[in-house]
Image (cartoon, rainbow over all chains, first blue to last red; front, side):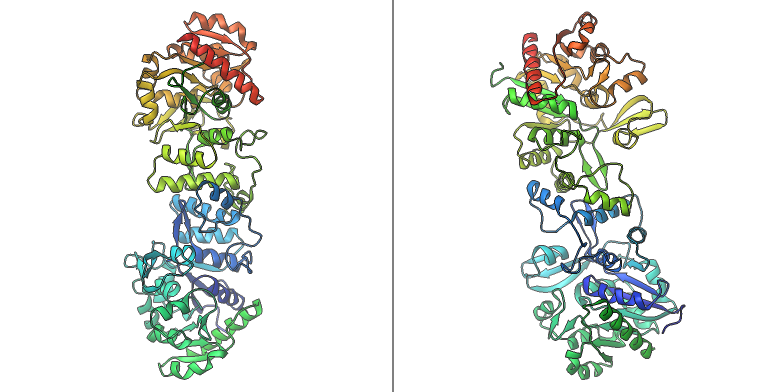
Length: 318
Length: 318
């Protein structure tokens, strides 16, 4: 579909994004596809550097993720967490014994002076992965969720507080100084880019941290390659996570059309689910082409099918 | 034997020391006994602060230690270590899943700004302990083993290199600036101290880091309370660890007499095993009183018996 020297860029958060990325890896070679992951959710816990979206991508692409639970590793054990419960009670973030190895090794390699890009590549190769997964930046960016009970770091909002507080806004601490990852920046500014696919991830906390870094949004618009997003909202609900709840709290309609409008002039195309076909006209009126197709990805074949649809749609917009 | 207001100070390293301390806790109340642990072996691994001697003391005194293996926790599991093997191969230090909870919690609390003393007390209470265990200092001291293949941090020498390199000397980085732990210092300088018991720990790497801190050795000598050590060398061998091998490499005779001579004018009394009775005359000639008694502690009763012997001996020297 795309020539070997045509590059596809994919911007992804965690679970929903990883599903589509999994499909994309079945349609494109590791040389064609570059996956840029949100690192605004990253945090330090017990002295360890934890990168939830990178981990979800690594685990999903290598097939060692826990599909049922939706996060972490399959066949995980929880001996350490049980012991933490006794000595500190600080168990809001569920650290599995095997998952811990990822955080320990990452922290160790970062402490040795390696960049997050180098560490991610090394970890992913050791786990058996061959896709090109990059952190959005080697610098620290911290997503802060502004709520009616005060500012919360993303993991505190998402995991500890179960997304209960009412959202009033978002902030990405450090984003002004964060330099987009080198290879990502080169791709954005070069002529090899054939299309950018924004995965069905949360626009506010998974995609915006990437877009907000200096020059990213502007470069995506200036680059001739089309930008296509897949709606994370299907039939007024997020497949997973708090996107729909956030939209309501921010006084936006919680539907696919509002997501397209939120991305605005960044988008050349928007992919919505069959159940949201009625929103197509509103989105087209924004000057954004629409693809209506099944977007719920339960099986591997669903992921591959959607990836193929998205890539064909992107190609048609070039 | 001792009045409630008479304080006993015990200086301890890991395994051997912890056995005698366990006995001492059966003879003395938590108010009477203060245990000061070597922290020169402490190190940072995968971003975590690990304190092997404090951990061994905490685990041994609460009875959750693994007696057979000699270190770590009973009924330990190794899921994380297996996963680390895959992603980094850096498995020379055997991190158990449950043991990890101690290191994670300690690191977390230290990062919150608590002192190692506060953290140790909190961890030990949560594990169910009620003895008064103190780190020798809240400041960092790092034992460096100087060897014919170069300088090695203690854990690299002890665990990674299995004590194989030939020792030429020792150094305690940071010891000049390290302030002895507050309560320890108060005890050393006050009139409540009735006796100091140096456990059967390695003189060079377990006891010397404590003694080398500014004022410690001098205060122990100046204080009227007798100082009694238990020989870690029995019949020319260390019960556990490299003490005898180190003595040979440092051109010292590897026997109980040489240990007494090494401690020198610090000691009022020295406790040797029955099998070393022939060394008593040499030690007495140094001006150090000798108690000959069974010192090998296999059972809990052995530990209590030796502790009682040592305390009675100390009292007789007052």
